Length: 241
Image (cartoon, rainbow, N blue to C red; front, side, top):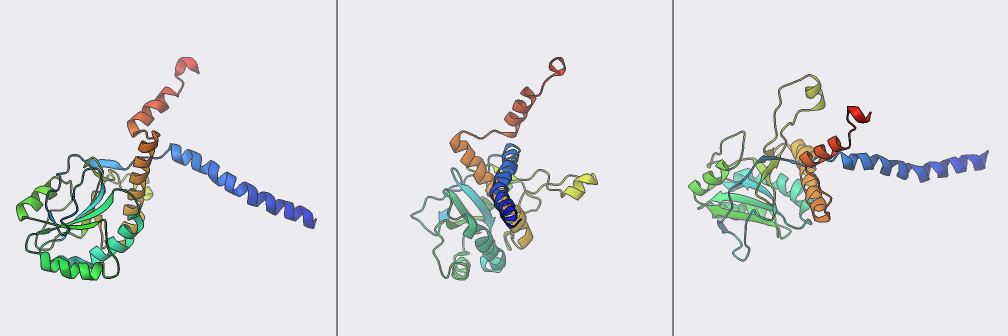
């Protein structure tokens, strides 16, 4: 009897990982890319705090933010972004954070830098400076729920892909909201004050985007439209039933 229990336990320990992997197979098939909210985000060509670095959106996965005239006032949102997002993804190639501030805010940025990176060098974290008109032009090329106040900046950041497309969620409703047929609303920017948004939504969305580019490198990526066409092709029509 004792040996029988041991065999059962060993069998469970052996088959449990296999069962888990089998569940992952359909999950990969149903993988959905992070949606394109807006195309052709304006390229960046501003002055950087690191003149040796060529700062640009193209060919990078970028988290883009706006600090306003007094960047130090956005220290809480910036610190959340650093600890909850940057620290998780800084090891990924082509990932970067770009924070834009108006010309003249350099001293406030220095104070912010002391608070944010006092104990480490943030290699892929960039501060750039531009005129108010250039910043408003960049912001207007984004799709946002709110207007930009250059005095205070914004607590929200945007995800931009390698082709300078803004990524997000067309439908950000919870399951209960969908079941209740609540009106559709999207997620275009991520508020860095709301920790739950960063942990449960932004980090997940970035992982999905990195997965998309990894599959593209391997030649395994299929867009939603391609996958739908393939599914329809594999579905028998009436004459084949």
